[in-house]
Image (cartoon, rainbow, N blue to C red; front, side):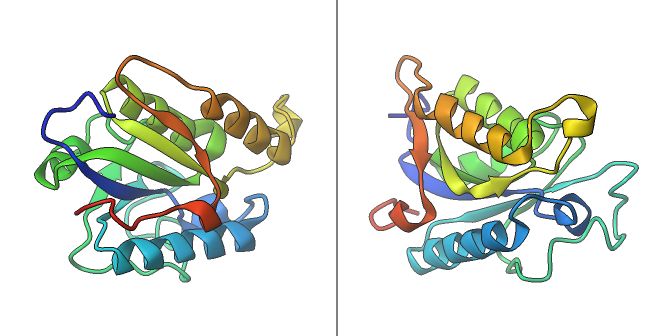
Length: 187
């Protein structure tokens, strides 16, 4: 269990599922559908949904590219964390948002697998959170022209190594969208 005291609750963390990020994403429609299912299930179980939105030169605030994809609608009562770095905790208010909700366990979905998703998983884990990656609810674009593996291989590798991630007092792992169980996760 988490190393964070008095943090028994779970939250769904949805990272950077923005138009500009998802426009060239591998298996975009299936990943967005899985994230939508996760959001619906979290809401039904009264588990907080925390949205993360990246800001950069390519994703300028209020631009069409910066907006979340139209299939995913954030509720006004759901926190929105703005970030400028890969790790969603770095120089943001994510930690206070989670602390206020007594969250010590994160279910993580979003984009991009090899950048913000991976950085946030590691950032959460090193800060004491339990961190579970939803294996079929994260994606990345094809950067093979720059020497990266094909997107399906990046996703498969991330799922492989996160499945076996360990550290004292914390849990990590992967789970498919169909197997995420928010019931009893607390709020």
